[in-house]
Image (cartoon, rainbow, N blue to C red; front, side, top):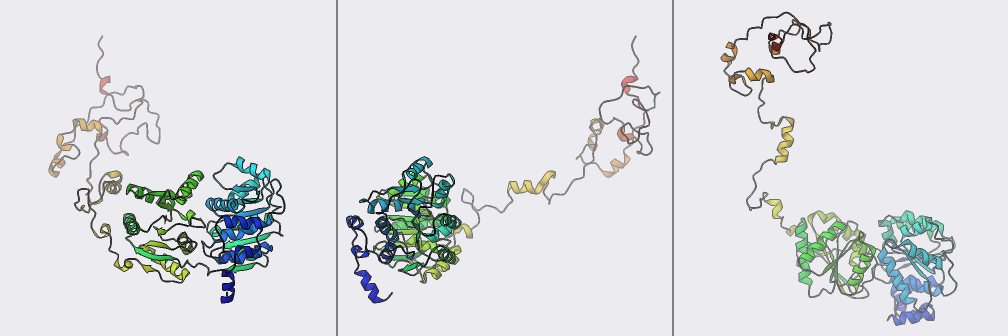
Length: 528
């Protein structure tokens, strides 16, 4: 953009953009007189019905760049039941609710029917709004497709389609849904496409669904605002090290903090950090995607109204939320995707105000830091020394200590010993003891020296005499035994091939009863 064009745009007012008198009155009542660069570049083309590809960093007024011309164009015409006239797609519920607030604020002189289709709200209430006819339909892709599949929504009457925060749609996996929705809308629509960054996937999407778009780019893609002071803060890798570092920085900046957003990468970290801050008596709240919708809106409203000083949040709060007075942003976790860094720190330093952004960095985060510096094209400054000055945690360099403060001896745990012992109950280093099997009946009459585990000299074992065999009695058939207990004299029997077959041998010779043995109780003479 040449200097002459830039000077001309700076001299523009909202009255020069072609907006209707009702819209201009609402803008004046809101306290705005001069448009931002993205508004000055997009509004005139939007009023002419042209497709627009808007690229601008977060916090530059992109929402008003499509809300104001849409309200002006909606002054003519009337909505029909289940057939909205305009459609605005947002990646998150908070952004959708924020766009609805903009339509209420700038459309106060119009009687517009606005329907908000987001998750966490009853389908019945939303269907009633669709039945009355919606001039403006603001939705997240998932809930919109749910209503479409229920047969409660027709998209054949959409005249203007707005795809906001397109790069965030890509990150959240909504691009297939966006393609489905675009195919349901008439080809003659006007499409307004806004994004802070332009990755290759987004570029392909614009080539597919935009017709000869007017490109409005007021800043380099993925650049940070000059009003934000950015600093890196070193920390140890342990969770308690990072929490202590965060508390220290908050206390150092406390005189200047009006309110601050603390970003975490994971929802579970949001909950843990929130509990930690409240235990240390910080005025904090939490916001993440698993919270109930009413709780999320209530928490966001409390933060916006100044009832909360610190808001611990996931990236659900990183895109497009209009909280103009955020003085500080703290990245408790450095973002994995470098584009998210631009959006996070864009929550501060908005509308010409100054802000500060602190990012906690550990040695494991070096590759993410390199990606951020490469994307933004600037070298970030350290607050109190770089990672080379990080002192290793005592947990890493010292031996484990017990609860009494004494170093623990290097020994295997009981669980590890049980695992090594296995079924035998012995560790591999223990010598295996050979034990002689002795039947229960034999143990009853065996000498003490013969009991398993008892010491017996080898000579004594050799000199042990065998008991004399019992005299054989005349065989008398007896009822068959029904148990498998070993006989008392079984250990004195000859080898298997020399002794008569038993009833449980593989071959049956027809023997009935006890065979050649006579039980002792059968030898007792009967008393008459």
